[in-house]
Image (cartoon, rainbow, N blue to C red):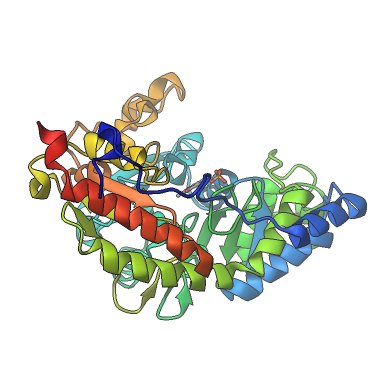
Amino acid sequence: MTTLALLGGHPEVTALGPHFTWPLIDDNTRAKVAAQLDTAVSIPGRSGIVAELEDGLKAYFRARHAITTSSGTAALHAIYATRIKAGDEVIVPAWTFHATASPLFHLGAVPVLCETRPDGNIDPDHVEELITPRTRALMVTHLWGRPADMGRLATIADAHDLILLEDGSHAHGADIHGKKVGTFGLASAFSLNGPKPLSGGEGGFVLTNDDDTYYRVLTFAHYNKRCKSEIPPGHPLARYAVTGSGLKLRIHPLAAALAFDQLHRLDGYLAGRAEIARHLTEEFTRVPGLEVTPVTEGVVPSWYGLTLTYRPDELGGLPIERFHEALLAEGASEFDRPGSTCPLHELPLYQHPGLLFPGCSHQHRQYPPGSFPIAEHAYRHTIKLPVWHREQDLALAEQYVRAATKVSDRHKELLS
Ligand SMILES: *Cc1c(COP(=O)(O)O)cnc(C)c1O
């Protein structure tokens, strides 16, 4: 091995970039999206590609209802709106993408942040201490596609009569003992945004087995046609069909066509990712300075990201910024540190919501730095990789391992 590329040596990764592109678009995908252009580019009812996608999602997740939306954020807003009212408190993980919780501000509700485990998922041991008479729901993210501890979380939700909700936006197809993430609570929300394991470019969806929740989501996000045709005439919401709640959050038919094409490939993607993740895990375990997050027995992640915990203590205290910089210099451009997916109390919206939502600040909680030591430490020490799924990508994955090994082996050169 030569000197570190950061110090003038040859980069370890020689493959031309970009090294990871998502979603995978081939001629088949192009044909299907092009065909949709000729079929319909606006679908106000539950028909055509929207119905096909929703039926496909219902079958895939074994859920009674699937409702597509314009984004994952809209799907989250919709599931909250079905049950959460002003002043309610909802327990959310302290570390997640903000959209897991931000729609709560629009409902006048209060996100209550909960410490996570080192893997970034909400820690069941810290949920009960946060419950008050105003707590209505418990929201779970499956961070980076690794299923949270749904057994314990469901037990806690049951014991305290809390609504259990899931944000599956990193975790399409992940499961716990064969039960798919997104089917554990009253409802779940998923994103179909660009890099997500199942992608329509933009879009999202809600899953629920509960009829009333289904009608409420329709009323919230799909006024007029769908409300008229799907909410039974005797239902109290039926009379609101024309206006719904006043919002229209439909998916674009071209996005639905892309997502439907990808849905057929999802299990193949996941199986390929699992194989490469197994390989990478084995290899990274041998690299000083990097610790692989273990996978719980009986759990299948979606491998939205393979996360490594950086251990500066094993590399003479080398700062993570420098280590990461050296990885990038080796040409391993997909090594990434989480940016906007950060502890929520570090974001201005969560520190001072009052400027955007006047009146909400009086009930909002203040969280000084250090409030969530595990989540904050995990966030600052995570280095992650997207996980490839094709056999021919294994050679590239190997180059990434060699890049990490080289920087780890030669870290002393960066200390002086
Ligand atoms: C992407 C994402 C969202 C938001 O989804 P959009 O489709 O981008 O609106 C919400 N939660 C998590 C965890 C996400 O990763």
